Image (cartoon, rainbow, N blue to C red; front, top):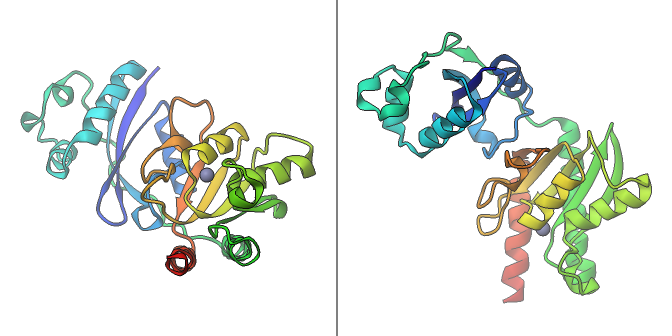
Length: 260
Ligand SMILES: [Zn+2]
């Protein structure tokens, strides 16, 4: 079997490093926007600039970790084939500059439907604030164009530390669907999920999460933790960030300003 480490150039000029055992289908997944990504929309990976074959997964993972730790100049040296300035990794056997270098992954935006569901999630967030004086976070779970769950943050009113909008929504969907798993579904949430919620989304087999505002303090979709896309889980959740981010951030800012 062959394992690949690859580098994609993102739309903002930064680099995304990943690994896979099937390079072509992985690139196709990037094209569909299906790759779990710690990138905000603006940083979407768009251009395959490097790939390298390894015989074992361990070698590939080790190379990926090394490259991820490199500064930009070093990554560029690798991409341009200036291996002499690099540590042993890049000079080991099987170093092969990409044969498919220069492939372009088209940029994909959020759809009208995405925006519509996120607006609903923002309504639920405002409801949390207005009706319950809760931190305004809302979520909607959708599958095949049908809303199967809704929720808003209700930790204070329920005396329940686990009653974040995402968990409340999964419970609602579980009751409606009579199932604890929701494969093929998309969760729209107004704030980046925390570790607890990201874990629950993995357990629930949610396929995709669309996030409005980032949470730079506790976010687990790439801001602080990478729970949604951890390779240690046997299911990964695709994350796309930044849809109606300003609206959500404003809602949260206003809420905390008023409480002070
Ligand atoms: Zn949470």
